[in-house]
Image (cartoon, rainbow, N blue to C red; front, side, top):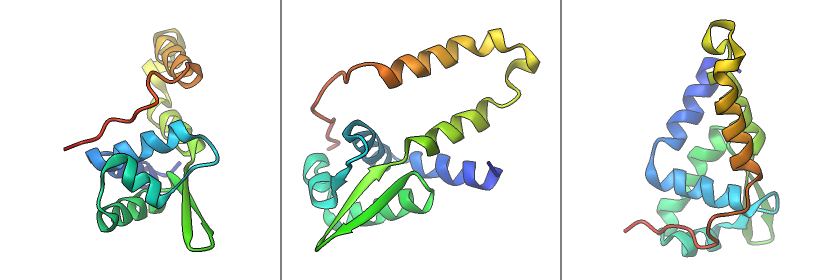
Amino acid sequence: MESSAAIDRLSALAQPGRLDVFRLLVRAGPDGIPAGEIAATLGLAPNTLSSQLAILVHAGLLTSAREGRVIRYAARPEALSELIVYLMDDCCGGRPEICRPVEEAARAACCAPPKSKTPRVRA
């Protein structure tokens, strides 16, 4: 991964609304969610959501697919994996045992059942 791609992805996630959108779509799985449902679930105005989604798509964190008049968005978990691998590359000066707890925690988080079906809504 190029450092510019890592910066784009980190920047895209460094805003509360975009982070909420990404986390919601990660929970939704590969089928994703239509834009209108994302807006309703998170309580975002359609124009605000549209710009948030565009930034996340541009960073390579989401995909979009048109279904008639609806656009369905889905997270790209592999994009997050690539980012984590990039950040952890050459971890701990060649001592992988130091990084093992981070890897195990990430794996457990990915495989754990959802904590809650109801996403947080920001005021």
